[in-house]
Length: 115
View 1 (spheres, one colour):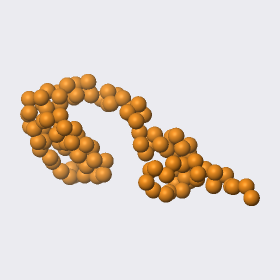
View 2 (spheres, rainbow, N blue to C red):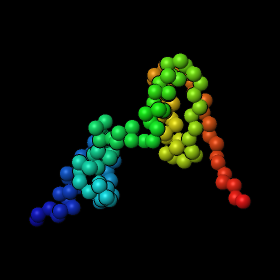
View 3 (cartoon, rainbow, N blue to C red):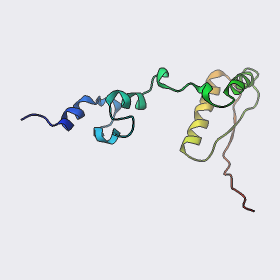
View 4 (cartoon, rainbow, N blue to C red):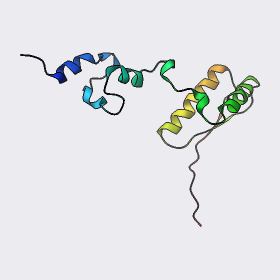
């Protein structure tokens, strides 16, 4: 009996990702191929976007570096959802590793005023 195409696909996905999800879970735009899924789940630095594509990064990065060097207080502000919290934690860890002063953390929920 010949293996089905799904069985072949299942064998082609490396188990090193630590979970046994079926390949069809990954079938969404850009993740239908094993290499695309690898880049998504375990990206190398070359797989990431250039951070200088973000607006004003050319001004923000040197300012942050100077604040870390001079051990200035830095306020980290993030929105109250998964990506906002994660971004603040990653930035805090980077500042800690670079030897900056412990950042001031803020968790503020913003409300929109209606007129």
